[in-house]
Length: 450
Image (cartoon, rainbow, N blue to C red; front, side, top):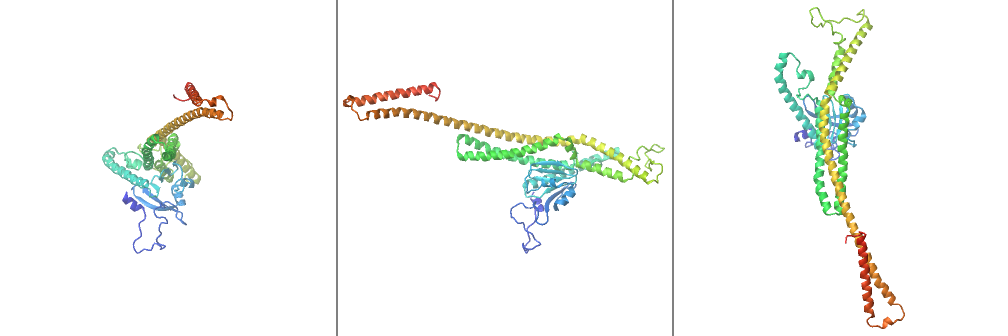
């Protein structure tokens, strides 16, 4: 990993070189990933190119229009890979390339190479290292498999695996699917790692919140839920993108780049022979062997220019029709390989989504429990307030009695020595009786648990 990082990143200036010199251009922001950004005045981007045949990685600088011509892509597809903008996860199958935008992995996959936006992100470097490792392992296994089956192939007189498919991989997966699999694995691993870290952080925090409801804990749970919603949206987008590809057989057939390239090359060579194999098919010599001599012209005079063009057009039409039928049959037959590949990572993303859904349900249950606790406390406060209001009403009776006896008039009760005690005793007994009546009414109506 460190060796790859040293090869992909620009080296430090040697001693004696002035950084202000025009020949040495220093990065404008230290510690900021600007390798994938556009260079001012040049419109160049730094790409990591991984070759399909050798597996070697190198850094190239290509402008936007050159990349469009090189991969036969429209400008809107390249905008999906722009690091200056945030686009949802997307997998697009085009005529000569597959555009992949999965989390940190933003690349263009062709039948011959992978063009990855250069970045300091560890997942990008891990993607390059893992792809190189798998290409090397497939090459070594293919060489062993090829050497073991070469004697049998020569004895049977059949074509070897390398001649038929152009790849020594024993699992029959073309290069574009291997690169796509590594990208899907990196994205799913990254999302699952984030989901696991969120789970580790969430459950202790929620348990702490249930035991102690405080403003700081509520704020931490709010931030946690925001992160959970954002991560769930990203996982859902990756899952929907894979599901959409699995539901559309045409999009999956469009992603067989190696097969389409081989079909185009065979069509080109068959058309360049001036008649192709279709014009010579069905003609045999007298000894029963296949004749490779000049075919019989479908026109009366071979010197006629229109006749030659007609012969060429007919042979090209036969060859094109045969090639299209063969490619369609092959695509429908081999589409199961890509479907099984996508289905495996669909299950992984669905498992991650279920994990996040369970965490969200746990947060919702915690919120409901907290709301129940708060409602219980609120009910207790209301009951206490009701008791205080009742006690205040009873005490107000003493104020009414005191106000009555405080009026400026004379009665015989004022001259009695024990009148004050009797008035106080009667008022107290009446107040207690009234308070007990209120409590019995509250219990009868179930306004408070008594």
